[in-house]
Length: 326
Image (cartoon, rainbow, N blue to C red):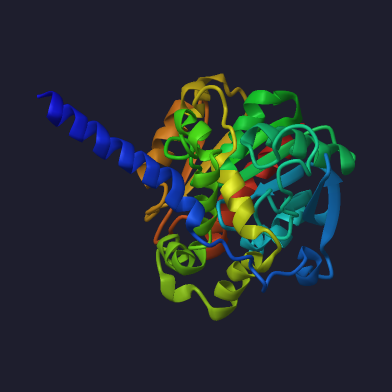
C-alpha cells in the first residue's frame, strides 16, 4: 500500500512540475503587425484621458437627456452605428470603447492610476467622468450584453448619476467573467503565458462568435466583418483581453442585487438570442420592479445592429417618456 501511495505521489509531483515548467517554455512571440489606436480613428473620433487611460469616444446630438451606449464583449462604438444618429434626435448620445476594446488604449499593469481599468469596478468612475466632461449630472445607460452588466453595476453603485436603464440582451445571469477563486492562479506567470496565447485565438473564433450573435448571419456584410477585426490590430490587444479576463469582479453577483434597482428600466431582446438566451431577458424584466419588456421578432443578440428599426421603435418612446417626466 505504501508503495502504491509513493507511486501516486510521484506521478502527482511530476504532473505539477510539468505544469509549472512547460508553460514557461512555450514561445510567446510579440505581435509585429499592431498599430497605435489613432491610426484607425474616424473624423468624428475623440479621445479623453481618464485616470491615465486614453478612451476613444464619439458624440452625437445635443441637449437632455444624455444617453450613453455601452457595447458588449468583442464589440466597440461601431456596434451602435445603425441607431446612434437616430437616437441623437432626442438628446445627446455618447458612445465609447470600453477598456480592452475598440480604439481605447490598452495599458499594462503599472501604467494606470487607481482601479484596474479592465475591472467592472472601474466602470462607474469612467462613466461618471464622461458625464461630467460633457456637462451633465446624470445619464440614461443603454448596455448590450456585457455592456448591460456595466450599466446595471453603475446604477447600483452610483444611482445618483443614472436616470434610466435600457438593457439590451444584458448578460446579468450568465456573465461576470472568471470566478473569484481562480483569479489568484490567473496571476501566475504560467497562466499569463497561456492566457495571452489563448486570447490571440479570438482571431480564429471571433468570426464564428459574430455569426452566433445574429439571427440571420447572411446579413453580416464584409464591411461589418472587417470593422470587427480592426481592434485586433491595436497595440497590446491580446494582453488587454487577458487583463480583462483576470480583472477583479464585484463582491456580490449582480443577479442577487436586481431588487435594489429603483429607476425606469426597459429590457429588450431578440427572440433568437443564442448568447444570452431570450428567457434570461424575460426573467430580468420580471425581477426588476416596474421594468418593461420588448422582444424583437427574427432577431438575435445584437438588435441594434441586426434589427435597428425594431430597436428604435421600442427605445425612442421610452426615451420620450423620460423627457416627459422631467
